[in-house]
Every structure is written in structure tokens, then in C-alpha cells.
Amino acid sequence: MVRPLMTDTVFLAQKALPADAGDIAVADDLLDTLKAHEDGCVGMAANMIGVNKAIIVFDNDGTPCEMFNPVIVYRKGLYLAEEGCLSLQGQRRARRHRTIKVQWQDRQMQTHVRNFTGWTAQIIQHEIDHCSGILI
Ligand SMILES: CSCC[C@H](NC=O)C(=O)O
Image: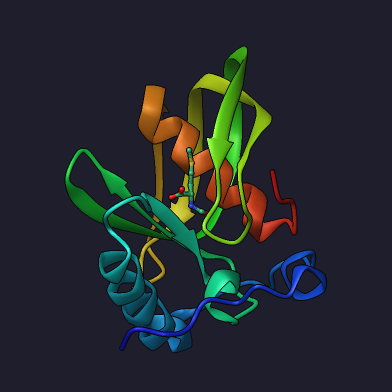
């Protein structure tokens, strides 16, 4: 189900609560909502649809991906990016890393660890920031 976008910046500034297997419907709605905004939107966090849980979805070279409770456990290659956000107007600068190692759970609560680079890494960093209540 496509959900309306949350624009309340006080709500969006909250730190997300841990997600669990009871949040699968939220992940499904988040994927549906990302797809509904696919021209222009490459990633979303659950708080952007009004659910304060640590779930992100993103486009990974054309494949929609989801992560529960993502954490960056290693980062290198700091650079300054210019990016937009569906929840805000305009473009802003953000510090990003070219390579990140992320630990997360899938919807069955199985843990994964993987490196991401470049554009996909940038999107994941943006969405993990959302889970910490950080907007660009
Ligand atoms: C470069 S990351 C940009 C992510 C942004 N989505 C909002 O969380 C978007 O424009 O899709």
C-alpha cells in the first residue's frame, strides 16, 4: 500500500526504534511508496511514511532492496555531496563516504554484512541518517 509522505520535521527528527519481524507490512508499504515515487526518488526510510522504525529501502542499480536496523560499521573516503530529499525542498550538502560496510537484518531477522560503494553507498547513508533523525 502506498502511504502518504510525512513532512513534519519534528517527527522526522526522532531516532527510529528497532524494527523486527512484526514490521514486514511496513517494509512492504515502504517499497510500494518508493515505487510510486520512482521518478526522482531512489531511497526511503520508514519515518518518511510516518512509521518511526529503523527500516530503509533503496534502489540498488535497478533492484529494490530493504534493510532492517542498518548500521554502518566501517566507512572510508569522505567527500562532500549535494543531494535532495523527498521530505525537504531543494538541494543541500552532506558529508558522505565512498565506501561503507553495512550490517543489517533482512525481514526474517537474518543478519548480513556487506560493502557498498559510490551512488548506492550514498543513498544508504542518506537513509540511515533518516533513521537517526538526521535530515540533510
Ligand atoms: C542521494 S540520496 C537521496 C535520497 C532521497 N530520498 C530520501 O530519503 C531521494 O532523493 O531519493
